[in-house]
Amino acid sequence: MLNLKKLQSSTAIALTIGVAATGAAPIVFAKDVVAAPAPMQIAQLFPTQNTGAVRIPAGTTLRLAYRDAEKIVVAPNERLPITLTVPSNVRTSNGTLLIPAGSQVKGEFQPVDGGTRFVANTLTLTNGTQLSLNAQTDVISRTEEIRRGVSTDSLLKGAAIGSGAAAIIAGVTGNRRITLGRVLIGTGVGALGGLLLGRNRNQVISVNPQSDLNLRLNSALAVNPY
Image (cartoon, rainbow, N blue to C red; front, side):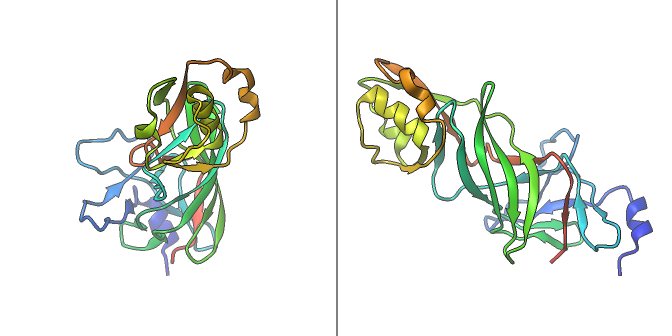
């Protein structure tokens, strides 16, 4: 049985992201800690009253992944619902499993000033448990220019493309068939309207799943250990 007073008086318990199959060192994320060269940060975990759950505090960062594409391309004004994955086990420093690898995070990419960001609303654990989630990534501002007469093959190859971005690409290039990527249904396509007519160039936002999907909790998340 957990000693609640002892846990609450301790300075911190590390939240450890499980070692990936590549053998990389464990990564720990935390609130208000400047990243050092070594991939380690500290996050405080406290048991919640009477429930046995562990509270992961606001400010903690969880790394997510998107395995269906090498990049995600959205229009600047597009809202794109999408499901991301937790790629590695999330454990306490004593090895207790909190979030198993393969758990899913639902949300959407939303337009913001300067780019887009992923805003999460639901965490679904591998046992089917669903938890409300209030979390988001940093703003992603990386853009790629679409120009008439210039091939978009390198942009589209292996990409998941929001329907708004597909409309921009088709409108500028005249190519009505996006064949090198997987088109996902987003919203806000109709709002593009005149932006597509007669334009020789336009921009889309390119999301790199390897570096852009670090999800920061806006509020604490209570998780029952496995």
